[in-house]
Image (tube, rainbow, N blue to C red; front, side, top):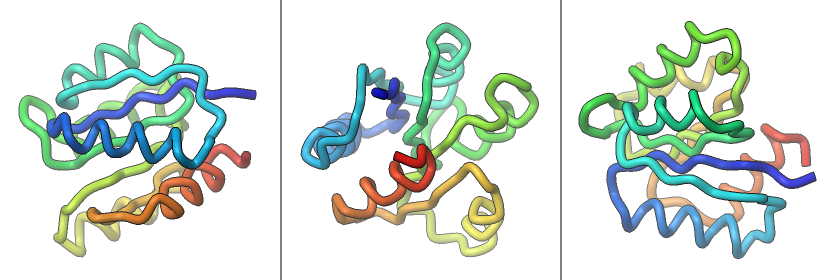
Length: 125
């Protein structure tokens, strides 16, 4: 089985790094979409069938925390697996994310094996 992923990060460099890391890890991906902020990601999540979301927390327009809250209110998205890839350092905010069953937090900078491990954990590949 192959998966559809969405990478939401305001940094084009980080979007490319995550994309390349996924390819290097030879993860089973059918197609990849990219969003520059939470609002754009939300629109894509409404239109496309996404199996996994890579999400930055600190973005303009709608940050990752707001997008996660919005997703919780949508029955079709509340269980969507999310890999948060962020430099966010606030322990209280990060701890709240770690309590979510469908969210894995990876701190920037990261090693490619961390992405592969989170992908496999969430999608049970």
